Image (cartoon, rainbow, N blue to C red):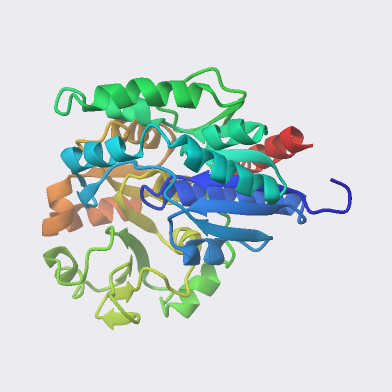
Length: 364
């Protein structure tokens, strides 16, 4: 491929932003090693998420690559609708797979990476290029937990297990839900910060006398009683990404940001004195990397959650917050204890860097 830019196709699950965040961390790591690599991003995560996270060459191809879970809210799964969509999507239509395989061949892709969309593995096989699966869980493992309530998921578990096993290379990132025969195991993979802690706090007008708490509420608006109870607290600034439907707003101690704002989420994490929110992969990874105390809410009906919580308890400073306490504001009673926890020194080894080096070895 001398004289022609090399490309890597990246198939990303649309379930939340966590898979896209990890994928962006890996793509950024590759670009820092080889700035000429172009990524062909196949995803339904909004284009702006990649625009805000990537600086190297990439192109966006909107595509449903995966189903994941249909959710009625940030903590509630709709199993019947999930099964209905899985039935429509799997097995992948061979004609559709061939069309995408032809597209990535025309784009000059010498490698397909999947997080954790198995469609990419099928496409890679049809295109005759190697595939790399990056995961800390796979959908067959996760769906298995719900078979008792939705028996139709069993057939998808069997099918997806075969699809994932067909990947040519397998990378697992901590916290790992089910350890397998991986070619590479790394720590959490998260996006790098861009601004210093002091610069972020200055731009947010957080004084040196104030504590800053990042509240990741999954898009819950400021009408929520939990937020109303925070606005009068003195000496603490609460930063709420997704808390404003439009422009950023200030309400007493609350700074409400739109889902897409001028502030890069990893920068907000690193600038905080504590992070409070749902224990999801990208929030955990960014908080772990920054060494910030974590007030975490466990999703009781999600199989991944106990694994993530066990990782937090072993490797991070934090405290468990009950889901109902997050929504009714009762968690504030323990806020002083959370803020009193020490920060941990930033992590020297980045999982994304290890994966970036691995991908370039496979490609070349």
